[in-house]
Image (cartoon, rainbow, N blue to C red; front, side, top):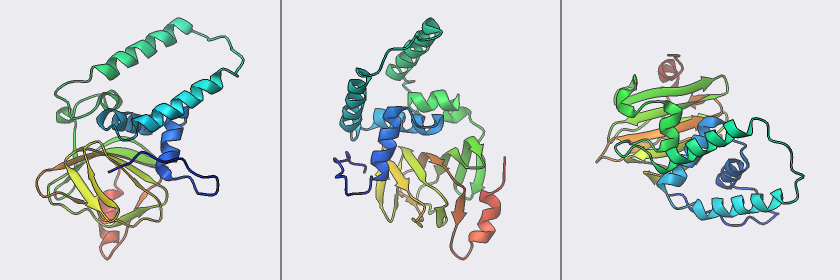
Length: 221
């Protein structure tokens, strides 16, 4: 569903996907969002060329930076090599790509899922006052409650597919919902849908039953 971003003229507003990928290349994302984007690039080819171009541009800028001494060089190199090895060799039977598997610390069958609504299970990876990172397992043919956000929501589809007013998203696709989007995603009828979603602000349910359902969505573990 996602497409490779095009060069943006100075007069246009930067698109959310462009900004997300640029922040990934510059190292400006939190761990959960970085893992989400890295997993997207492993699962889908759609934005790899654009990201590679951004990384080449960033590398060229390094030529103009005065070198500085690297503290604890051997340990940092060892961590980099260990990370690269894990990227190239994800668990073959895992639904989770290697970056998410490392972030979560266990495969989906070993997690303690929480029932949120009929047909909806959640595993909270991280949580703060600003937002959260969660794995969501939604049954086939289910419609989530209408909701919006005070910030943004970035969702990576890991299994199955879902649709909302912006389009249809399958395994490897990224869906970015900005604060002004009020949507009600629905999963495909043929298969349960597993997603990894990161928000930078609390979710707000809308619609006639929003206040009632907020009791479920707002409860801590």
